Every structure is written in C-alpha cells, then in structure tokens.
Image (cartoon, rainbow, N blue to C red; front, top):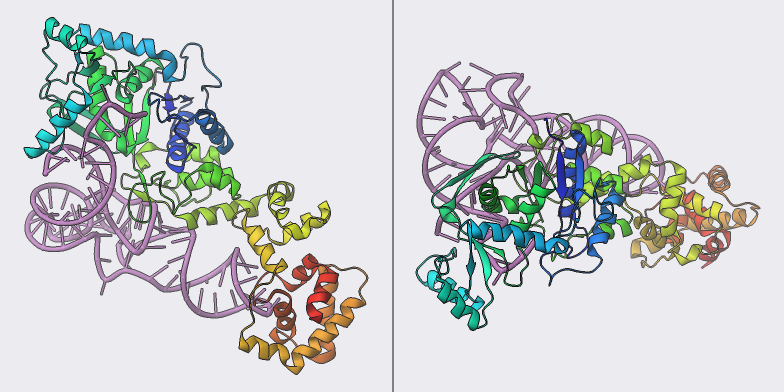
Length: 480
RNA sequence: GCUCUGAUGGAGAAGCGGCUUAACUCAUUGCCCUCUCAAGGCAACAUUCAUGGGUUCGAAUCCCAUUCAGAGUACCA
C-alpha cells in the first residue's frame, strides 16, 4: 500500500455509543493500526432533529474508554482536515453541490413533500413498491422555476443518476458486488433547508479527509452505488469498501436501539462492571474468527490477528452469555490491586458493609474474585448472604430440627463465642473440632450452619460467609 | 414487489474439492473436586453442513434451481 491508510468511524450524535457502533469503530481501528494508518473520529450530524447535545463527546469518550483511541477527532483535530463535524462545513457541501448542478449532474427539485408522497402512492397503485423519483423537475425551464419560487417553494438538489450503468466494486468482506444505476432513483443530496444528506456529505468528507478504506455496516451496502456515482461525477478516486455483517438479536432481527431485551449501550455495560478489555475482546470475536483457536486477545494481539477477509458475511447474534464468560476471564486475570479498585465500589453498594474498613472490604472482595462474571454480580452474591429471604422448605425444616443439626449448632455457638479473633482459618478449625468431637461430617456438619445463616443450600465457602457476616450477626442468626 | 446479501449443532464459528469419523469457544448435560453453588479439571453433545438436482473416482466445499432469512428501497444516518 503506497498511500497512508486512513479509516474513520463517523457516528451521528443521536445517542450513546451502542454495541454496533463500538464494533464498527473497533474493526476500523484494528484495520488502521494493522497497516500503520490513522483512525479518524468524525461526526455526521446533518439530521438536526435527531441530534442530541453531548452525544458526540459521550461517544468519543466511551470509545476511548474501550481503548479505541482516535488519531484525529473532534477533540484532536488535524487542521489539514478539520472541521470534524459536518454542520460546521455546510458551505463546503453547498459549493460542491453547486458544482454538480453546473455540470448537469444534479438539478434543483421543487417538488413538495406532499407531491412526493402522492408520487409514491401512485407508483404503489401501479404495483411499483420501490419508489423512484420520476424526474419531474429534471428539465424545468427558468420560467417554471421562477413560478415555483413565487409560490414560496424552496428547492432541494437531486443527483441525476446515469442511465443503465453497472456500479461494480470489490467489497473487502463480500467480494465482487454490483448494482445497476437504473434501480436507483435520483436522490436528494442537499435538502431544501440547505443541509446535505448523508450520502452526499460522506463522499465529500471521505474524499477531503483522504479516507482510503471504509468498513461499515451491511446496511450501507445499497448506499454504495449512490456514493460511487458521486465519486464518478467529481472524478475522484473512491475508497475501498468493506461491509460488515450486522449484529442481530435472538429473534434474528437487526439489533436496534429500541431493542429492550438486550443492553445496547457501552455505558450500561460499564455501569454493570464489564471491563473494556473484555468488551473489546468479545466484540472482536463477534463476526470475526482468527485463523488460530485463540479466544482471549489483548488489543495488540487483535491488531495482529485482524484481517478483513476473515470477517463473516452472515449475521451474528449477540450472545450475552459469552460476553459474561469473557468478562469473567478478564476479572480472574486482574491483579489484586486493580481488582479492588474495580469491585469495591460495587461492594459499597451493600449497606451492610458500610462500616467495614478498607482491609476488610478487600478481603471480602477477594472471596468472589474467581467466580465473578461482572462487577454488579458481587452485589447479588453479597445480598444473598446478608439478607436471607427464602423460606425453608418442609424438608429443610425437618433437617434443621434433627438431633444432629441441633448438636452441631449448639457446639458451633459455644466455640464461636469462645473465639477471640474471627477469621476464615479459625472458623475452619471450629468445624474440624466439631467433626472430631462428634464424628459428624460432610453435609450433616456444614449444612445446618449454612442453611440457618443464608437460608439457601449453596453459596461461597462457609468460612468466608461467617467471616463476611461477622461474629455478632452469625451468633444472632444461629440463636434464632 | 424490486435491488443486494446471506444460509454449517442452542450461540459465535473453522473449513473453501480428498488430511473431516466437521476444529475451537460459549451454552447445555454428566463425572471429578467439594458442605453447597460457582470456579477449575475431564467427558458428552451436527451420521451431517437449508432443500432438490447436477459435475466428479470423491462435495459442507464447484454449478443450477428452489426455499428461507436479513438489509436497503426517505429532503434518516
């Protein structure tokens, strides 16, 4: 590759960074880094109504949190390519659109929304379901235009598609793809409010920013010929395109922001205690398979392993379970210091431990390190221990009323009372001595205590539970 | 409808003409460990690659048709 690789992620600021966006950004980033190129973060905010203030920076920062750090962005502009926000360069687009009009490649369209609507209905009535603009305004005389203007109509600008031209391109993911221009109607490139549409603005931006490769969602595949036509009219070299598969939900539909069964936004995962490295790792393997059997990748390893040709072209389903597993692997791998920093905020949400000192909280947190799948899960674990709510079953009641159970409980109470310092080792010793004195062992030994304390038959090790609850609380629960 | 794109186990998928009795990972199930759950270890889990035809000594892999699914079809991006 002779020219420098430049790729971009260009979201519209309509909300938080979501899974699909993050994945798209990730693969662009990997591509850039793989070929020593630049990754550009730019904003496509031409739909004024849907723009949400602050969404641009929020998305940028979520990306950076994930470790996907742009070389250029709205925060770090390169003067050569700035501005990085489309609404800040409206004049530029209008200038280029004007050029197209002058060359006869585009024309003013005075049709109103209502007329367009009518046109659509008429075509539908004739059995044509895909609307194609009928070029009503293609050959307007100056007098007709004057007349329209007098009526108060403000024109939009439409691109005149060439007749019967094949737009072929080699897709980085899918191979050769082609479209016929006859299937595409003349589309609006500048709206009547003077703002360019997406399909026009991307082309101008990608060209001016010297973007060499465009990796984007499959939903853009059919936009490509429109953009190719614009490149052709300007005589510009088009970038290479690669259309990645979309992510689907368990119903097989495209993951949409309105899908409430699945968490959509990076911020939600962060709040739940998912690690950025784990999310990146998971996203990397969604619709992409490396050529070895590796499952865990650092960003650097992912850069090395990435190859757009290995990107899947069939839709990928988002599997929350695998994300959890991946995250759990990363939690296990953390060193203790980082782990504490990560998990203690969650532990502090359980009010029972509000008086615990730092050391005690750390020890507490450590108990769950090996089994934790995401940060907020520790709150669930802890609550199960701290606030036993489940009612005993009849079977459990019988078990607890048995001679053995009572004997174990009483002995345990005595020995615990006699204890000066409570810690897991000491508790372990108590169990051991009860076992030696009574000959009771296994389930019969531990379960009376476990059930009485937590009301459930499973959970972390008994010694830890007792340590977590503290002597006073344990005695309290055992006596009742 | 039209255009485009796909189709390998519950999920992500490898494979791209013989090495495939279809890799690997998640999930699930069983066993081990163990007071229990989880974690960890060990196993099991597609006689078959959407269907039907063809090409070939040989097909998940190539060709054709059918079916199904998704995306797009906006003065949204």
